[in-house]
Image (cartoon, rainbow over all chains, first blue to last red; front, side, top):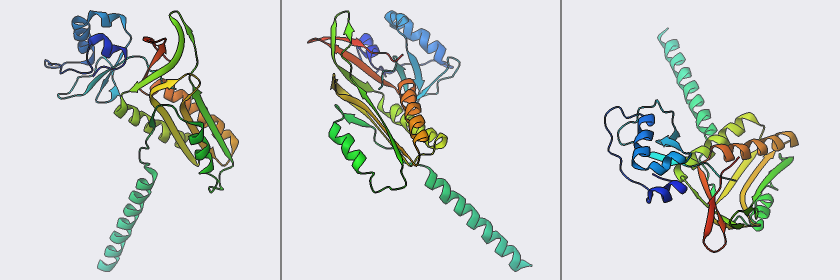
Length: 74
Length: 171
């Protein structure tokens, strides 16, 4: 799922991501950069099943992944 | 002998039940935080009034976030359009609420945040904490606001003119 400016940049609010085995958050980030080069210039955090995750985390199957631009609450 | 054992087993079960009961009491249900559009001064006033029956309270602290008409390169901000990863945000608000109750001596706590468009000059965040004494209320309100700014996935478009906008980022 894409939020904020990232939804505008990718032109969609969500998409299914075909994953290979042992996909980590770090590898996913690289795949996202490959598909959407403009994302390289954007700051974003990756949440896996609603938790902000480190690059080393292995992504489980059927995970809900959200790309979150900087927070602006308040 | 046999009887004694039976009795001791019963006591253990009661203790366990009692512990569980206390645990259940401590777990607070997630509350609804998001409201559509601005938070009205009327709503803030009504919230204060609804606490007059809780006479153990000696201090309320209220934080209100108001939309500023910042000058940007492309013009003056006329409002902010908020969106959120709502499910994760509700979880984050719940975590903040639990840790604030743990850290500070609070009687109650309410957090409201806007979604959608909030024009400049209007309220988008309402944090309301109540305590027997002032110190806990002051400190908790600051803690909660800082936690919201840093850890809740809320996004904001600063609206400029008829169609322009700039994405907001908390510092």
